[in-house]
Image (cartoon, rainbow over all chains, first blue to last red; front, side, top):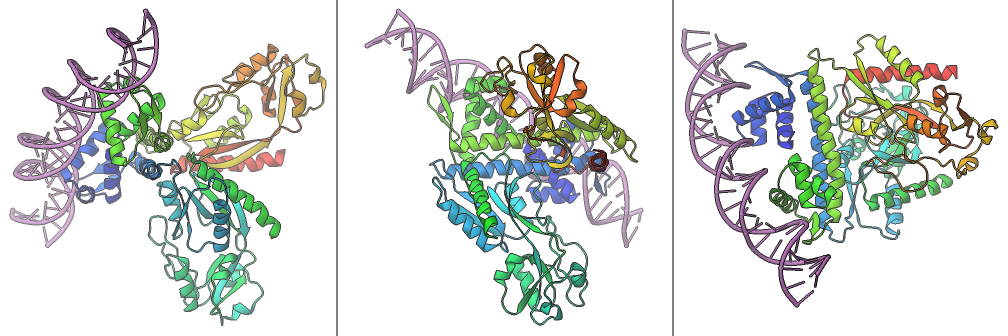
Length: 290
Length: 290
DNA sequence: CCGGATCGATACCCGGACGGTATCGCTGTT
DNA sequence: AACAGCGATACCGTCCGGGTATCGATCCGG
C-alpha cells in the first residue's frame, strides 16, 4: 500500500464526499474514484458504501481510517525526524521538547539547566502548546520528547518516566466565598452557580457539548476565572502564575497529577536518552527536597 | 514520502550494498540508486556515505532506518487489519491473540472461556510463537492483542493491563544437588559448572555472544535442561509442564514476572475492549484466590 | 605496476500509471 | 418531469519508474 493511496482514502473517509476530498487533495474527482476502487480491489474488501447520493464507511473502512491515520503519522514523523537529523551535519541534531504552556516553569527550567550542564548536551528547542497537541507533535516527529501530565494527557504508545506528582487546587476569583476555605472537595465546586468548569477541546479540535466556556490554553482559563465566568481545577504548581485577583484552594479529592517525560519508542537518539537520564536524576533530588 | 521509497531505503540501509538490496527488492541496481538519490534530494540531506567500495549510514540515515522501519510496520499493520476486517462482512472480525508457547496455559484457557461466554463475543484465533516475536505480530497487524511477560517482553508503544504476577523458579535436571534445596538465590545458579543459562535470540533473530546454548522456545530449553546442558530460570507456572526428569526450585531474588494483556493504541475494535475488560475482571477474581 | 573484478553512477529507452477533460447514469428534489 | 448533484466511466497525454548498456573509481592478485 502506498502512502498516496492512504492519503487519498483518509481524505475521502473524513469528508465522506469524493468531490470535496479531491479538492482538498488538489486533484480532480475521477482519479480519486479510481484510486479508491483500486485500493479496494487490492485489499479485497469494500471500504466505502456509496450510493449516488451518500458515502459511508464500511467496517473495514473504519479500521483503515484509524490505522491509516496512525501509519501516515508514522511516515510523516520519519520524514521530519530525518530532515531534522540532517540539518546538523555534526550528527548531533538539536532536541525538540514539547510541553504545555501552563506546565511548571520551575521543573522545566531545572531540567534544561541540568541537561545543558551534561557532557555531550545538544541544544534543546522548546515548543509550548495547548493541551492534547503535545501528543500529536511527538507522534508526528515535530518533537523528540515531551513533558506530559497524567491523567490529562494520554501516554499511549510512548515510553515514559515519572518525574513527580502534585495535588490539585481550585482557582477562584479572589473574592469568592470559597476562597477563604482551607480546602474543599470536588463536590463543593461542581455546579457552582455562575462558575462552571470549562470545556477543553478534544484531540480533533472540536469541543464536547455542555455548559462552561470553551478554552484553548491556561492563560485563557485564568482570564475567564478572573472575570468570574468559570472556575478551574489545576495542579498546585500553577499558583506561581496567579495574580492577587485569583485565589487557589486545595481540592482534597481531585486526582493527583503526575508529570512524566515521554518519548517515542523508536527513538535511538542518544540525546533523548541523556535528557531522560538527567530528568530521572532530578526526580530523585526533587523527591528528597519535598 | 512514498512507502516504496522507504522500502528501498530500508533495504539498502540494511544490506549496505546496492546490488544485494536491489536483488532483495526484485529490481535492478540502477533504479534503486536513482530512487535513493531522489529521496536524499527531497529530504535535503545525505542518508548514505558511499565510496565506490563501501556504503555506510549517515546520522540522518540511521534515524530514517529506525523511523522508517516503524512507519513501514504501521502501514503493513493497517493493510493487514483492514484485510482481516473485510473478511467477515458481519462487521465482527475475529480476534487474533498472540502469546508465548510457554505461557501459562491455565490463564489463557480461563480468559478464552470467560470471553467466549460474554455477549457479543467473536471467535478468537490464538497464535503461539517464540519470545520477542509477539511484539512484531502486534505491531505489524498480524494480531490484535497479546499476552506479554514483563520484563522479558517490551510493552513499548502498546496499551497494557496487568493481569498477574508470579515469582520464578530455576529448572534443573532432577538429580542435580541443588534440586533438593527449598530455595536458591541467583548467585547460586549463575555460573553453575556445566549448566549455563541459555541465550535467547534478539528481536532481529541473531544471538548475543557468550556461553550457553542457543534456544528458540521453551520446549527446546526444557529439552536442554533434561540433557544436563543448561539450567533455566522461568516463571513458576511452567511447573505444570515439567516431567519428573526435571526439578524446579524457587529463586528468591529473581525478578517477578508480570503477565500483561497488550493491544495497539489505535485499536478501536470493540472486541479488543471486551476481551480486555474480561481479562481485568478475571484478574480481580484471580487475586482473591491467591 | 598493471589488468581484472567489483560496485555505484550515468545515459538512454520503453511501458504503464497517474492525472486531466468530457460525459454518462443514477437519485433525490421541486 | 426537469434539473441538480454526485460518483463512475471513457479516453487521452505526460511523466515517472524500471530495464539494458556502459562508464568511472577503487581494490586486489600477480
